[in-house]
Amino acid sequence: MAEHRTRFDGLRTGHRSVRNWLGKAILVWLVLVGGVTGRECPGAGQDQRPNIVVVFIDDLGWGDFSCFGNREAATPEIDRLAAEGLRFEQFYVNAPICSPSRCALTTGQYPQRWRITSYLNNRADNARRGVADWLDPEAPTLARQLQASGYAVGHFGKWHLGGQRDVDDAPAIARYGFDQSLTNFEGMGPKLLPLTQRPGQQKPGRIWADAERLGSPVTWMPRSRITSGYVEAAMEFAKGAVARRQPFYLNVWPDDVHSPYWPPVTEWAEGKRGLYHAVLQSMDQQLGRLFAFLRENSGVERPTLILVCSDNGPEPGAGSAGPFRGAKTQLYEGGIRSPLVVWGPGLVSVEKRGAVNVESVFAAFDLVPSLMRLAGTQFDEPVLADGEDVLPTLLGQSVDSRKAPLFWRRPPDRKTAPPALPTPQPDLAVRRGQWKLLCSYDGSARELYDMDQDRGESVNLANEQTEIAEALARDVVHWNVSMPADRGPELGAAAVREAAETGAADR
Ligand SMILES: [Ca+2]
Image (cartoon, rainbow, N blue to C red):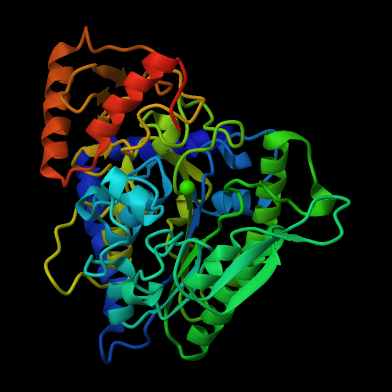
């Protein structure tokens, strides 16, 4: 840890010098343009555009990797990536729940633009909550742009951007720019479905069998090995790209640490948290095979960048949000702050190897323009980009944050509930610089926190820093009304009424 802090101090010093920053910015530009995009020019020699792999884990808490402080379970494979690369402490996702978080990472835009503001469910419930049934295939996607620029692009794992429950006519995952896909019960096309087995059980059970309607072929395999299923498919796909001398982009989006928890029978544990940790350790091991493959294949013809993060905060009682308040579905930090590990020999600054960046503030949608720049491409058509290019920060060459504030809106169906939420939740949140404000849709019920001093969101400064609170409330309300609405106001009011009447949380 001491070593990490020392290296981070170097990052901070660089940030404080404008001259150094300018020099570094120019250097970074030269390295990137000369070192990456320049080599793809005809006649400029061989194509060395990096391979890119995004490991996006379902419902993993900020504090769940051992390199992020977990002392109850070990994640040596991911820890090794962090030790050889970088880890980021102020990385966010754009929603505290699956589908909108995935939408932002896929499009580089606020998920509200596509009316995906909670998890996608059956048609009736989607309509009840005012959310879409699937991501509009007209949306810009990182995958499609990389595909157009010559990458082999594959999706392996949970999708949850269309094709679930009775929504069986959603676009195929390929429509969003993937050459190949393999998903779970929440996506169209070829899929792995889980067999479940507990100690002493002879015949495995099946869950989510009705998802067989959502595409084929269907392969049933133990849920405890499901990440290996995605990893094997991803590696086969990558080998094909390597043989064709084509750069690859892989989504590897495991879902096994999302409930229900089914660790290997031999690793069985007691209680929800124990089971969760057993699954987490098993997933880490299974991902290790992918990392070993990428390590062996990186740098021979082209470097490889691996990003590892989570789609939203932990489910209460399972994962840990570390020092942060709140959990999945909430706009407090525990719901939206994600661990981020970046690994990329030959891409990440050598002198920053093993460093921890504690100060750069950015979010999942910023990865879209950042990774496109790394790949030497940009959207062919003008696109309204909410994400900002933070590539130098990702590669350890800068500690700049994104420039614009970050805004969030809670899922329409999560004003109260699930049962761990003691009080009605704030509707909106904004992070600008050191300040985080949470409030109602109309800007009232303000909570203001100084994230430099109080990352656990424990001391509300709204009545002391009134001008800052006022400005942030105005900005986030303005942002919210500029986005398509969902039925959060109506459902929230009803949930609060019901909770007051019954003394119970809604679901
Ligand atoms: Ca999730």
